Amino acid sequence: MNNELISIQTNEQGEQRVSARELHKALGLKKHFADWWKQYKDMFVDGSNFMDAPQSVPIKNGNGRIQYLDDYLLSVDMAKHISMMTKTERGNQIRDYFIQIEKQWNSPELMMARSLQYANNKLIGYESKIAELTPKAELHDKFIATGESIGVREASKEMGIKQNDLVDILMNHKYIYREQGRNGKLQPYKKYVPKLFVLKSGGVGENGIEFTPRMRITPYGREYFYKKFVNPEQTELDMEA
Image (cartoon, rainbow, N blue to C red):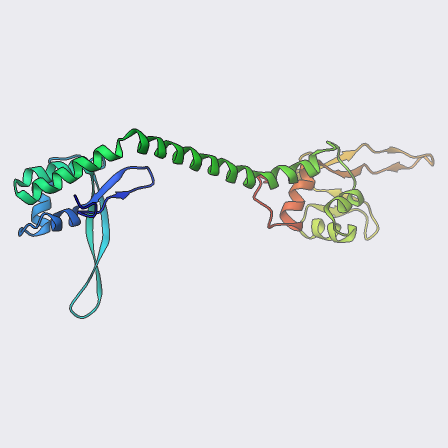
């Protein structure tokens, strides 16, 4: 029997499907497709035995324009039953063809091949996911490794940018401000403490003058600023402050 009697499609879920329009044409019926389809569709379950394939069949009109017609994708079992119910010699031929297709599809060899393909696809998916997550893990480890909060100078070196550039970025985006004019100490806005910044306790110096607590950037803060300002092309991280 000709294996190309009617084409069989295999979807992403590994299910075999038959075009209703192709089946109608192969059966050689005179009844219009829409009338023929109405005759059978209520006998079967939408979403299980068949599914809609809207505007999936291109045809060329007399003026040369392409028009797209609606179609339906049938399970092989449904296509087999419709062919049998046609009660024609052609219908019997197509029914026998579908029976052979089902036998081949359910053979141990093809079932094993499908299982191996499914497992291979899963493996490829896992490998892709691991590759996607690796930059996140490496970036996270870069800043979390020490587990310590550090000063702006050390943080800028860690991020690979100039200290003044980091200060300008944080000040311009209102994460920090400078106390007492141009040469005052850098201080974080309170809403970013202690998530992005911590303050090392202040105290009284040898001269008896009280000094301001020193600002430190947390590991999370450094990761956040690096992703947001230094290298925004990195894979996305959940870094909302």
